[in-house]
View 1 (cartoon, helix red, strand yellow):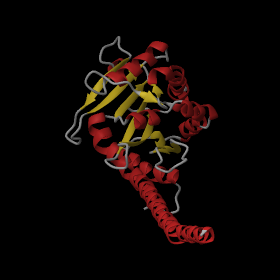
View 2: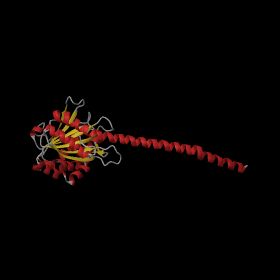
View 3: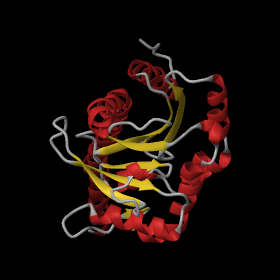
View 4: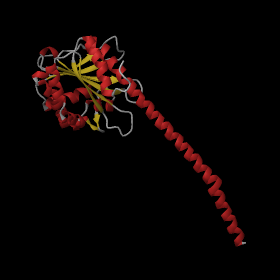
Length: 290
């Protein structure tokens, strides 16, 4: 078991490393959690880093790649975590280096895949992208597919309170900097990137965060992602998520108690003191007038 004084980032690494080692897989992981606390700079970003067994050369290449300010800057401009949380959507994303086997048809770059499994009562959906470059058309397709897959007849997705379509350039920058750029670095050996939403049934929004998994191996959605990785991700994020919910409830309860005490004291002061003294002054003025 990890020590209690581990940071959240270290805790994610400790637990995910054990899982990926057991699965005989390796990946570079980034995590984003939506904080329940006021004034939090959401989303909270963590870099658990390399999990599973990997060569030192590849670890160094991946570490150097993600140790860039432009990546965090791009994510601050447009975050898939915020997109899913704000619209409360359990939408999966899978970006892959161009591979015809990943496409519904050889001429398609992006398409929607339903994820049906006995491990989940509700059907999940995954947007798959297998393209060589980020283009305006690709961004438009992602936005359209995200919206059309929401409800019957589609819905208008928002980001920061604005229509998602207005974030075109920010989406493009994030795709270029945080996703497609790593496909161009051979020493990193990344062919697949998964955005795995973390979902809870309480605490306001269902979607509470995302784990971004960068790997050279294709992960099977029906045998690994849905039944193993997503429940595992929920399990390691849950204590931190619910601790913040309880803290918010404590703060609200404290504020309610303070407001009740202040209201009672104000009522007592005005009713028992201010009004009494006012009535006495009025009586005194009436006696003087007489």
